[in-house]
Length: 186
Image (cartoon, rainbow, N blue to C red; front, side):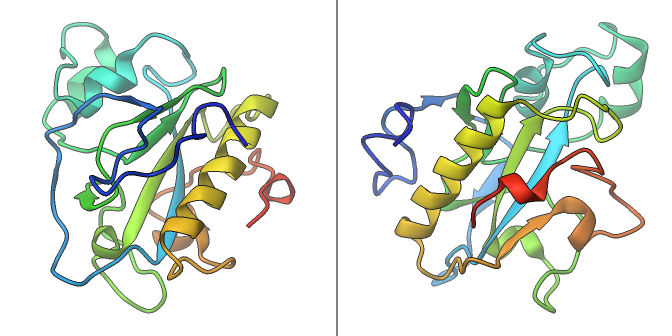
């Protein structure tokens, strides 16, 4: 068991042993809609740079367009994910899993649109074109997280873990060709 998740998920939708940084970019799930899928993404801000804290600021709408030229193109966006797994394997939660995070965008999964309604979004700190891919610690933490989410939500079946590129083909490439699905134990 990961030390980050050893106490489990609370009724509030938060893991009590995981750092929680509240993102305003979420809303209530529709009544009686439980998570059915986990969507794996990757992000780094600016692209290819890790450990800057920019992803956390982005999910909190605190990323200044003046910090980096790349940020100007995204300063108007309001997005979030339920979780971020940093390169070190550290897990941060931004949205309770009982709420709808804004991570999937225009997409289709299990034959349904509005994927944010029935999904949990997990961002890995990384870049879809980075040949170094993702770290051992990230894969380990992702596997623990998937295991705990499946325990909490039996509606998340073993084959219901998807890439962002699976649900938004042609629009989103992440987590990309360097993400090793063989290392994910669903």
